[in-house]
Length: 154
Image (cartoon, rainbow, N blue to C red; front, side):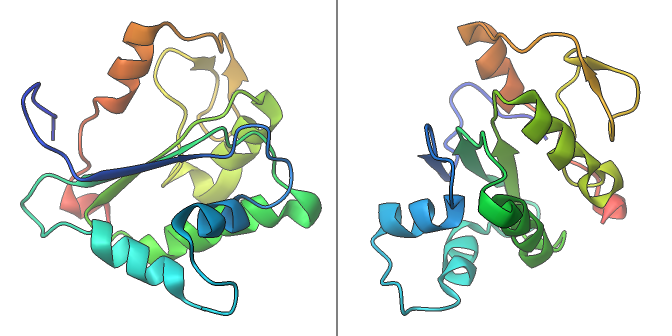
């Protein structure tokens, strides 16, 4: 699937820039979700879900530059992709400027869900050797233009 220039896409973007602890708590605070409310991430994913055959929604997690204390942010990513389960019509983009975090995220799930962008690495996609990490505005825009995977991939 390709986004057209005039196409409206349901989306959500949040940044954890300069956040070293807990990305999920930052997201909860950003959305104003009470701390005692459990399972709220399900509601967010349901709100973003689009019917099959329609353009997917997009969730951008920017500034994901730390795995967090006791790898809490890594656990969040695992939980997020587990909840998506290949059944939600939502595309998730995780942006990081930290090579160690990017490498760790790419190693999760054998590269099935999290993959490096083309032309940014050499070697295997599950253990990339990064070739560049600086992005121009045009490259960032191009990074969000993608080919939607086939249903057979799920």
